[in-house]
Image (tube, rainbow, N blue to C red; front, top):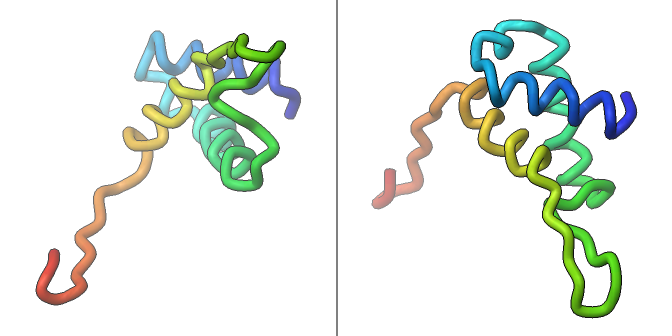
Length: 80
């Protein structure tokens, strides 16, 4: 899936949370997170020395990721 396709799905889901039940939207979110983990995608990129551009749709994907993943309790005594 291309970045432009991912961006369209992510921004649509960010504007309308009902779309989070769509498997293609969930897959798009997971794909963005995987590409971030690989280093293939960045939330911000440098266009020129000292000039950075923020990719808002990537940030939105990160926020949506928290909405689609269940909360888990982790224990590492004495912390929880």
